Amino acid sequence: MTQPVGFIGLGTMGEPMVATLRRAGVAVLGFDIRPEVAQRLAAETGMEAADSAGAVFARCREVITMVPTSAHLEQLLFGEGGAAPSAAPGTLLIDMSSGEPSATRSIGERLATQGVAMVDAPVSGNVVRARKGDLAIMLGGTDADCDRATAVLQPMARAIFRTGALGSGQAMKALNNLASAAGFWIASEVLAIGRKAGLEPSVMLDVLNASTGANNSTQNKFKPFVLSGSYQGNFLLPLMVKDLGIAAGLARETGSDAPMAAQVLALWQQALQALGPTADHTEVARLVAERSHTQLH
Image (cartoon, rainbow, N blue to C red; front, side):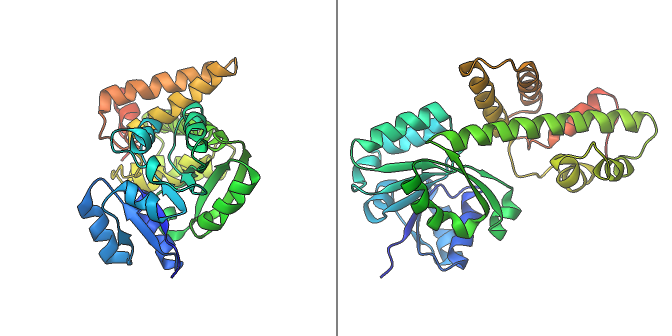
């Protein structure tokens, strides 16, 4: 019988990722702190539901984690009733969370004392891409561990980029989101200014996307999530702010002169304060437009 891949964290991204693995014929033993979520996904995909994170580590030699923060992962592994003691030597932890590189390195060092290896493998891509197995994955760790992780990750990925040592994937993910957040905010301002000048947002986007002002947000976010009024980009505002904080921390740690990074973080922090923790990140465009006394849809 094929040994299953463990998957802990069946939330917004974890759920479609498990479904993609199952379509590829991968046996999955999954766990979520909400038992009803794991049971539903088991019924829908044929995944086996575990009753604890420790049970996943006890049975699986490759375990994927997809949790909100490094603090959540540390608690899951080493907190009261933590799962790490259940992991056998030779187990590989594939952390796909958007964590803090320094915290990940520390976790990796603790796991290594019991013979457990770790890679970080955060993703870029939304729920739709997760369902299609079309994610970009940034993979950090030793060559041997990355080779092993790649075989597990391949069904979920359009591309897997080896970024360097453990923690480097999460550094790259935070920097990617810094560039993405800056692009989204400035495009929001551009559309608000243009709207007040008498330009139609949909026409502006067509022009931008055929010109040098295009970015991922103008191409893939504004029409389906902002101009439609849905604001359902499936990435919560607090998670974006968390990643921007990690990127700003990297700038401080490396002594980099990054005034724009600091400004982008400050703007998104202000948006979080205004919109609240349940807001989707695309609602920032609505906030920018409202502050200019206009709307984009």
